[in-house]
Length: 165
Image (cartoon, rainbow, N blue to C red; front, side, top):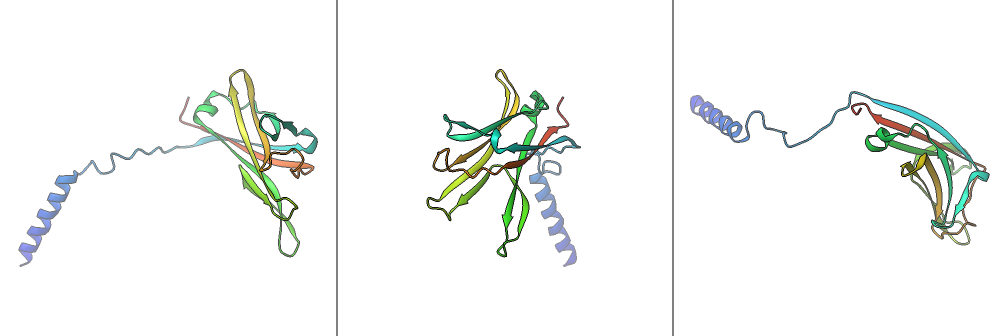
């Protein structure tokens, strides 16, 4: 009885491996592993007076030159952005939080509720200097509604793929 069971087990295993192959499992999945990457972080503060209104896009903007943006970063790397905001607990205590960009904030306790969207665009090439434009856009598209604090604090992480030349 044991001999028959072992025969069926061996025949089943050989059949399964014969159909799937010993070495072809997972060949259709492409994965990239990076040994390391180059990372530079930039802390940026934008004062209230530095924001300008862009009437084409109906948003406030501030452009910051970032000379580290090169073709390699633009084509093969990435830039991650965060903003530091102050939040309040139910007890009225405040604390700082770092949030990923884009950041969306809804203001509901106002006469006219609206939503504020804070993000950034990356510029390289096309005759422009390497830069990042931070922007604040509101749901009503008006220049009078955003609550621009005295200073916004941002952080950019410029990440290059170490495998590209």
